[in-house]
Image 1 (cartoon, rainbow, N blue to C red):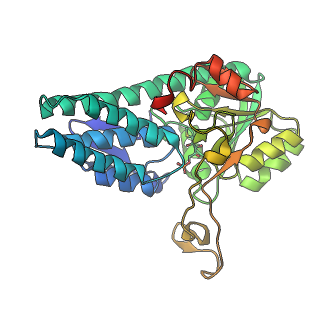
Image 2: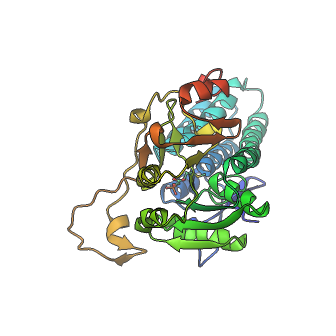
Length: 352
Ligand code: MRU
C-alpha cells in the first residue's frame, strides 16, 4: 500500500512527491510551517490530500501550544490556519478541512489545552478516515457507470498519492481492474509537473494495472482511433452548476471527448464541491512559476527570457461532463438539481 502521509504520535510523516518515482523520501515534522511549505511546492498534493495534510498541520500547531489562555490559543491557531490557507488557492478541500478545524477551535471552551489538542488530532484523523471511505464509495458508484470491458484515459494523479484512500478516478480504475472490467488505462503525462508520468504511472505499476503513458497531445489522436471508451478525471473544485476545475489540460480532454462522442466522467468527494461557487467563474485559478515551464526537473528547456503563462488548472464547463461521481451518488445535468437530490450544498452550506 502507498501511504503518502501518516500521523505519528505528535508528528506528521509524509512522502515528498517531488522525488517520485525514483526516490521514496519521507519527511517527518512537528511544524505546521513545514507542512505549508510542502503543500506549496507540491511535495504533498492532490485536492483531498491537501485538505487532510492541512488538518494535521493545525493539529501540529495545537500540539505546540502551552498557553491555557483562550485568547492566545485562538490567535495562534488562526495564524496557522491563515498560513495554510495561503498555500494554494484552487482545491476547495483545503478550505473545507481548515473550516472543520476552526469549528473545533471555536467549540472549545478553554477547559484544558490537552483537551483541545486531542480534539484537533481527532478531527484530522476523522477527515483522513472519511476520505478513505469516500474513495471506496466513489469507486463503487463509478465502476457501474463504465462500459465493460473498458479502455480508459486519465489525467494527472488522483490515486493514493492524492487522497486518504485508493483514490477518486484512480480508485474507480483500480476497482474496474479488480472486477475484470478494465482492459487498459492510458495516462496523460500531465505537463508541466508530470503528475501522470511520475505518479500515476508509478501507482498503476505498483497495482499491476496495464497502463500506457502518452504525452498530453496524444489524447485526441487516441480517441480518433476509437481506443478510448471513457475519460475519467478528478477535480479540485466543483461549482454548483457542475463546472469543474481540475489540472490544466482537463478542458482540452473534455472538448476532444465531446467531439468524439466519448463519455467524460469526473470523480470527487463532496468535500470538493463548493456550495458557494455558483459557476466556474467563481473558482480562483492558481498560476505557477515560469520556471516550471522553462525547466524540466532543473534542466533548462527554453530560452529563459521567453514570456510564460502557466495556470495550474482549467475549468471544464458542465455541458461537457457526462456525470460527476461523488461518494453520495452520481450527479448528471442539470447538476444543481442533481446535487440537491444528493443533499450536496443544501444543508451543508457553512461546511463549504
Ligand atoms: O497540482 P496538483 O497535483 O495538486 O493537481 C491535482 C489535480 O488536479 C487532481 O486531479 C485533483 O486534485 C484531484 S485528486 C483526487
